[in-house]
Length: 72
View 1 (cartoon, rainbow, N blue to C red):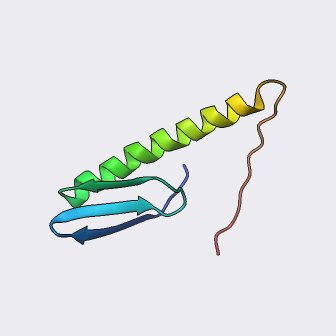
View 2 (cartoon, helix red, strand yellow):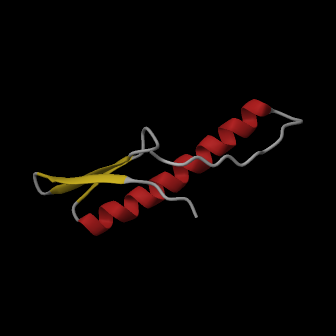
């Protein structure tokens, strides 16, 4: 399981948030709980989209390699 960082705050009665590690993953909801759920769904969709785009660009005869990095 991968872990990501949600940056969230309340603005004028709305909860807004971003996923720190993935540009473009941001959401806005009326409650904190709804925001966290929307961020999870949007993050999953973005990761799947990025994966499919990478595979499409690689075309054929490619390899998949896992890469691990430590934060900090």
